[in-house]
View 1: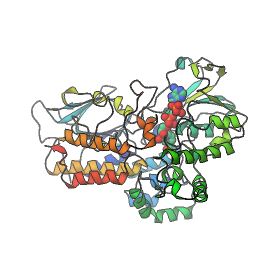
View 2 (view 1 turned 180 degrees about the vertical axis):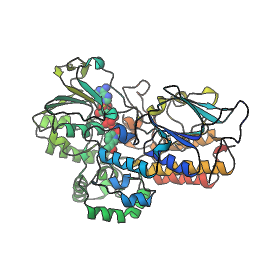
View 3 (view 1 turned 180 degrees about the horizontal axis):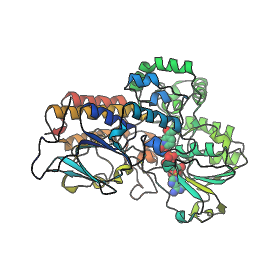
View 4 (view 1 turned 120 degrees about the horizontal axis):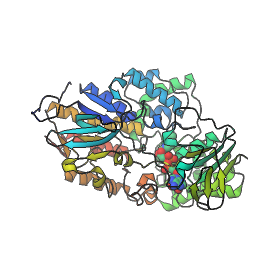
Length: 546
Ligand code: N01
């Protein structure tokens, strides 16, 4: 279908529409949006702040960055040719390989010709008279487009701690989410890493290999479990390729689109021997199996959760030589799996190395950054390099960085002040013709699977509008309320939603993010898709289409 919205509705005051659709962000969501919307014959432009494609996998090029999902479950599934020609070299590919893959996708589908790099969107204002969005870049360039589709990523607004003196540090400093393209040499250097989430853990285990001295500043420890990565040979890749249809079918059926699925048994329904043997197998298994493929109640029943937490704690004790250090590395403020589980490779053994030192910020907090290094309540340390692995203003932070104004100048930041309200995580009341891919309240998990679904849903909606000659799509208030209530209902009873983390919208480094809110959809992905499918099948009655 070929559609153009350019001349249909033009009046003398109407701004010329530069594009039918502007997509913000050239990560996995934005790239696929471009591919699908271009197929409709739309004039599409992707605006990307970076100088290359990849989004998360462009910015997070820190040492040790790699997939925590199985590589072959994480690539795009839409093109058989792409599946046929791309070989993954490891079960969990590293960032350079992932970036190579996304560059390959870019080249194969000739995407970059419609991607405008070094283009950070500063504001986006809905023009009700002309049913379009006016976007302004930070260099002043302006564009008008019928549709605006955000493909910002849930973890793309890096946050720094609010320590005094950060600017005074005389050495090199980096945030993991804004890592430079040049290689950083750690050999013989005194390196500090602040933060022990998924990014910190991957960084620490890599930097420890070469740093002269590595000092880890840990606030709350996380429950890390082994990634158990390994290479993929040609024969194994052929087998994986032959199994792609079943693999993607499986990802469609599991709760969070991973290859791992919840075990239907309850923790206490099996004997101690069966349970221990199962957990031993999970601990020795790959990736998120122990988190996403565990007994059905470990993330909802405190007793079951305590038992698996004790199991993992003992594993940590068995791997760290110094008992005091081991205890510091075991979380006591939250149970296993209630925050995102970092995946590790010899992470705990790093603390047995003579060149690695662990500082608990709960015992001796950082007081300030100095010209020479870091001052805690107990001592002053000198460093050549400080790495901030301090995370992101997740989910809503990437929206907050753009001044988005809907009907009557209503600001999105105001609309979402008490937590996001959306229709299926794709639309927001009073923000017509704005669609979100991987926005708040959409199904996260093994993200590319949800990205493909979301993009196709948006593509179908736009195609429907084009077919019926419609230029405006607005979410009805009652539909937004119904979906938001459903998201809240699905959040009930999940232990993770009772814990402070980015998954509950908490970030102590950001004003206004000190209390928990329901930022994620916690139901299953099949349930999510069933809801969205029904909306489409019934002709989008939840939307005002005119
Ligand atoms: O960020 P985080 P991340 N003083 O928020 C600490 C995805 N990801 O970048 O826990 C001291 O998890 C903070 O301490 P605390 C994945 O979804 C995916 O590591 O708040 N410490 C914490 O230890 C992941 O969950 C992959 O007490 C401060 C750390 O910094 C998400 O991204 C790889 C501090 C932040 O941890 C985010 O992970 C990497 C302060 N002021 C990431 N502020 C893969 O799939 C923060 N911290 C491979």
